[in-house]
Length: 126
Length: 307
Image 1 (cartoon, rainbow over the protein chains, first blue to last red):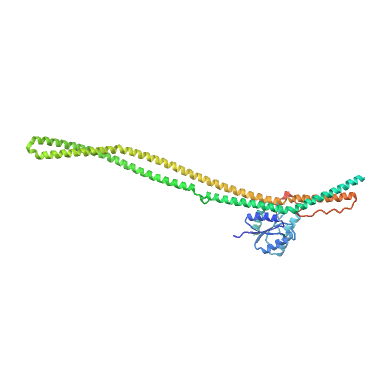
Image 2 (image 1 turned 90 degrees about the horizontal axis):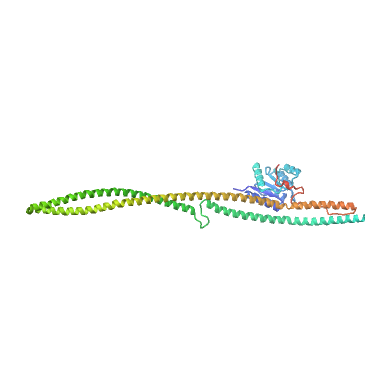
């Protein structure tokens, strides 16, 4: 049985490693992107991405811009995005929601909460 | 007034010096943080992976033991084998006990037969006695008849011989019967004793087998408990390792604090210069995003909001 694919977008290799490790242990197939632009490319290049975990502040293209870009392309209307960030500003959350993000988690995260959230988002989107 | 101005210049100099020191520390930290955290994270991951390998290996061994299979290449299912052997021995003893019961039955029959033999011997003895008297009478009659007693004499001799043979056979039968009658109760008693011992031994063996099986079941339950506990502990280790990795990255909150100090020192430098009415061009505050935003609040860490 094929594993469910999740894309992790973060400019920090450490965060990608942590998130990837937590999701892999939960049975997901994890793909990585180093910034928003790379994330948008990976969403198109890797088929069957079921959810995206992404940072907000990243070089080249931030997480919210990435969501806006993907949603504007219209190819993945049901793809859920979970923002994993140190940011807690209400305006940013609101902007992310408008862009299409479904959840917002403040770093540092608890692996079990992140995994549960990703599972719930995929179930809801499915 | 001159002195005061000198003091203020000294303060300005101190502030600049402190800023330089803070910036140096800050730049050093940002250069090191990511690499160090990554190395620490990799180390933690390695530890977790090794722990997982060890737990999986242990789990395999315990699962084999719980299933009653061989533990390792040379291991044997010793408990099960012992139980099977004990069961075989119990079956054997049970069969032997049956044979002994049949022998007892035969002995009882033999005892009855031997009594009949003795009874027959008594009858034969009575017959022998009668024959003996007949032979004696025949001799007397032979003596009376004298010359004409040739036939009686022959009969008397034969009767005497018969009587003697009968008496000898009767004595042998009686002796045999007596021996049988004496021996059979002793054989029976021994057989009874053997049967009792066999039954007692069989019962004890059955108890031992039951105990072994109960202990084996208890051992399997203990093993299952150990496995479940191990799984839970491993899950906790993984969760805590993940949190540690996550927190490791946030040593840069220290860097965030230094950034703030740098901003304060910058403001102080500007104000002191204004007081002194001197022209200064302080280095602007650092604007860096190290691991997150400047308004990061650790109290909100891990918080999940559905949008």
